Image (cartoon, rainbow, N blue to C red; front, side):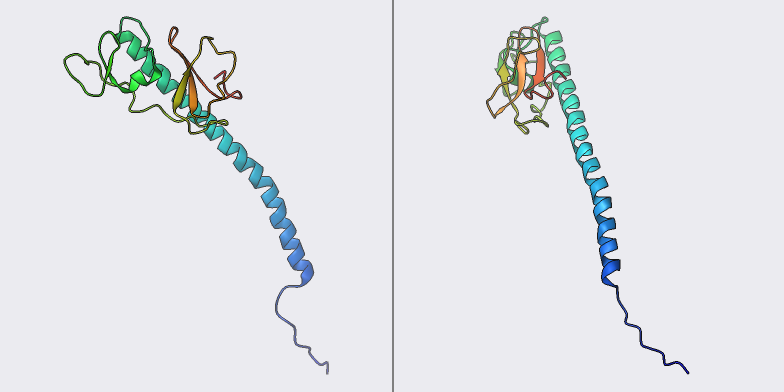
Length: 154
């Protein structure tokens, strides 16, 4: 009769190495895809924010004899026919805010900035280096762009 040997329970070193290699391969495939998805989501948020701001500017111009506000923040305030801004609706400040707040910039080095900077270009020739400037605004044409060199042309 053969003597049966007791078999040890557990994994061998080779089995563990194979599992670790498989996990590494899966991670190498998944991580870049997740990074691209995050970037694409930020770009879509940028497009939505620009659309909101541009629509608000067009509504402002429609109610103010075709004139755009001198300051981008005017679309978040009550305004008079002449464009003067107030914090509440009165007999003078008859036009309601077009946006609750200026949305934050979702991309680039100034990500999260809600400030704006005036620009003469249409589109602007470059971006502002000020970290609080999220948006570039041309008050003569009503043009607005992201203060992000990689997404300036959106």
